[in-house]
Image (cartoon, rainbow, N blue to C red; front, side):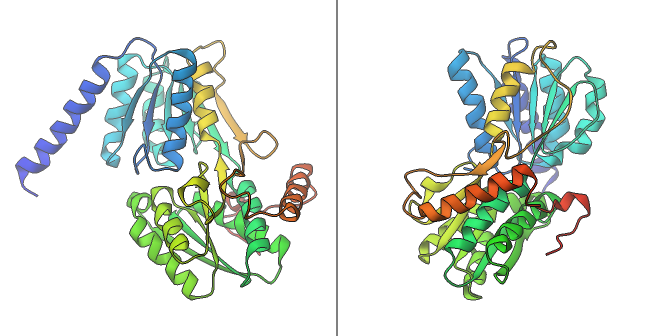
Length: 335
């Protein structure tokens, strides 16, 4: 990379961001999507859907920016805060260090941080019980599997995604204690969220080893898993948003993580100091923060008996009668 290419590229990105926010009205809300793109058909797109629903219902406007590199985080957040955007929704745990630094500098800006915790009076931290939702789709996978062998392809190899896997494994074992589980991750850097080719190859390797169902918790990379499973006539499981429609009849279900609702609520409430609630909030099965997707695209795949079983397990988890291990408690998944 030449000096000109490197520095002109950085300047162009800065100019683009300046142009994006220059027309902002005071107190318009804003969202900054994580790496992988706004239309990743998973985590980011679910956030976009929540923002869009707010816009359609209220007639309001919101600002948005799609990160293409980690280096853009501080500049993007500063620009929106200095422009007066309120609240600002930050998507993804990778915002942790940047937000810890900048939240005290903009005490009048309310910030909603999805998937991480920053203790500041102007930050609301939203966590989702991914292990609980993953438990349900793991149970469905075990009930549906004909080989007694199921797989998991995660995106970035980090505790958050291990939390998905552990819940999935517990759900499968709750139905079939002898089921075989396979586990793989697309990578160890943020590019792991947008590498469907590698994710698809990992799914193929798991199928070669006997898996007939693979759960993809990998952001945009998961699209490669769903495609590979559909091509092989086997079943994939989607994540975050409802991905059943991507391959009707081949996506067994999707583990829903309702970041769309979180974004919608943030835009409605967090811009007003009277309704903004800083601090940590955990969203789980009882308040429908997580769940599994049923619609016309997978209705024929899940029998009444399967649904009754998974709903019974769901009720028992909510009641505390069935324990789902949380990877966050000890960075382990004892099975």
